[in-house]
Length: 191
Image (tube, rainbow, N blue to C red; front, side):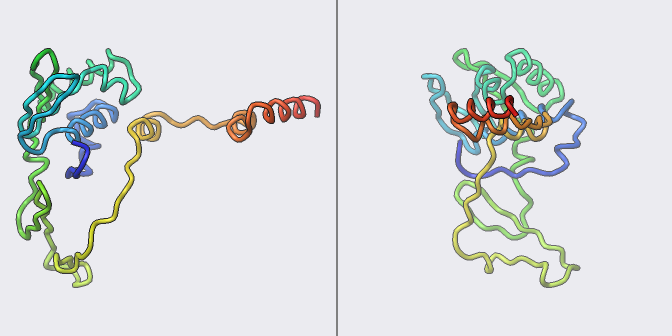
């Protein structure tokens, strides 16, 4: 499930279904990793058949992915289940999470369709807008540009935790090797 894309509305970050931004991040991760069609996967040496909108992942793996405790993940999953965003079932002693409104989130309205492998892209235009704002499928040529997504830990740091500012010693420790750093510290202490 590491290829392709998901549709994501900006209002998800202000939804009352979530208690905090970490819950939003975990939910978005589950949506992104969910199967977009029925498929067979091997997870932790077990074969699992997933339906559309399902993902199998262990609490421990989620905890490791987000850099949080097992208990914190369990609480987040309980909240996501209680708010009706996901359901959980056990399959061969593994948790299978199903995104309750997966089709609502991932099936786009159809006005103009362009087929992309495993997805349908819909472009809706506002007919009252100026022509330069109109987007036609015929103007899209070539392959889409490759983008690099930040790692989940980086997102967690940027969104949830305020990055701490490094002092002069920490900055130099990152820039210099151990021997040069030691010399620099001695020089700083002697001056």
